[in-house]
Image 1 (spheres, rainbow over the protein chains, first blue to last red):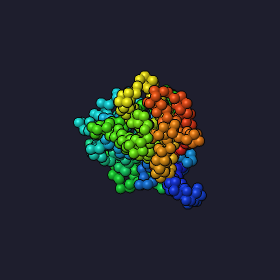
Image 2 (cartoon, chains in turn red, brown; image 1 turned 120 degrees about the vertical axis):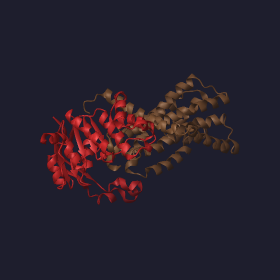
Image 3 (cartoon, one colour; image 1 turned 135 degrees about the vertical axis):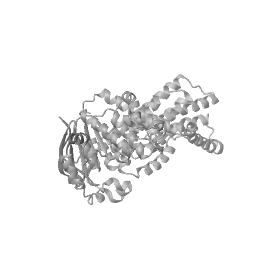
Image 4 (cartoon, rainbow over the protein chains, first blue to last red; image 1 turned 45 degrees about the vertical axis):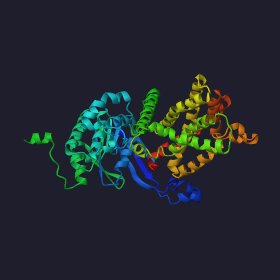
Length: 256
Length: 260
């Protein structure tokens, strides 16, 4: 069973499409004026992979390599120019800190707002409300407008929503880096729990420690292509050769 | 997603629009005590200025002139606010459009619900003015409000869908729309009754989709009459605007996240 399937996916952007100039330019230059210079810029070139249900996969690579675009393609926010993307299961994307939150609403109100934007029903959200609030550890701040939140608090709220509202496929884009150490650990624990429950996780992070701890598999993305695909440990070492991998709890116990 | 039934989908759409609507209403009325009064201040100040210009200076001698003015101006406020707002409805929600997949159509929908809500909230003022002029305000009026509001809602929603989409690709559209709305305001019978327009221009004025709409409101509030000709014409324009709006939106919606 495949949760996410990419077949020869190519995504390009045209940097000088007709839209950038507005009506004024359209009138001045006509339709021809803008088209000739529009050399499409590749973002993802010929990506093929499949992620089975229950796997935790990390996308690893340098800034601008195309990791976030891959997540957007999975989330269905972007459409490929060529190739096919198939997703089976309900997505819970956490792609940007605070996206979907309204600064003037309280944390509690934003949970409802973000929940419906993610595609959950109000009934479901109400059922999970207490769990979300408890997980976020925001305490009394939950009834304060989100505009007074720090970025760490926003990350807590965002992660609490996507993780507590019963996701099937979790997409997490580097947003955990701003939480404090303890909360980061808590998030990793929850994601471990998801893996055990057979849920699919796609994770973008620059922390190879987290990648190795959490993921079975990683894809290395470089220059808009998938250049390596394999066990998380191998790929992490490929990306960061000086990485010292801490033994996991189980391994540590096994060695003693 | 493919397994979702139509019923689930519709429930989701309506819940989303409801939550987005509630959010804006809350934000608007929570932060200041005078939120409600502010939304009335604009059309009322216009009414005052026009009353002075037309009745005091030009001595137009129109009967129940203040009632006439506000019954057109409040509806126009809904038109103008929504059309201007709809230009930016996708642009200003860029962050959620780029980061999550939800039916984008709920954004202009909930915006139209908000502006419609403000219109409904201003109806008591019209009722008070009716009382003042001794013009009846009864069940016919209430039924007419529902009938004409629905027509206006659908007409505006189609236009807003097209405007919001077009403004993503031509970001200076809003400026053009602002100018066009100014012109439209004066060729729509808001400040003068339709009967004052010379015969040979009447059919041109009726080409403006807002003209029959405002005529219908005037007939309702001043004469307690559901003017089927003008209401019907508004519904006809609403159907055209919905079709055009939906076609434009559906063709372009998959590119929204790219151009934001």
